[in-house]
Image (tube, rainbow, N blue to C red):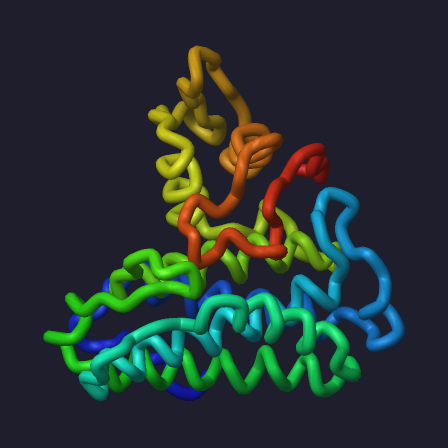
Length: 234
């Protein structure tokens, strides 16, 4: 992908997960026939496929706009104005399949290029999201990584937790305030007074079941607001 090289001064590991997540989402999306865009997607996904796809594209545009504003030292650095994000997602979800796919592809390139071109000193910058909440630029790669990998599962067209990189699994576990111990191929997690054992993918599924995937306002979005009752082979 154009602009996919690691940005200078940026969070290297998060950027790598974001680029890999984008590629993974695009690969899963490519497996989806155009006639299937109007179908609901994974049973546990809270929204239809069109909304899932449009959210991934629109959020990439918002984060790219934010990074660009910080790079250009504009007075106002914001993802979307109030109400703009929801309108963009709703509008994007109505696009023909090819145009909707192009939205995701083009905004992915734009975001990658903005990260690539951001000077090292600017990675400490901060903007605001569409609700006026502070959003550090250094946080955007992780938000993108988390969204794209989880959205690929929401599509219900081949995305699986079993494909998630171990570093992503560890980060998702950490976000749930859990400690994890590795025992051979299995993991054991102490979480909310319970012990969860099994493969990393199965543990993450159980931890996220019934809880919010996205704990940052910028990604409290239609994409995978929850993973309740997600069941798939480990």
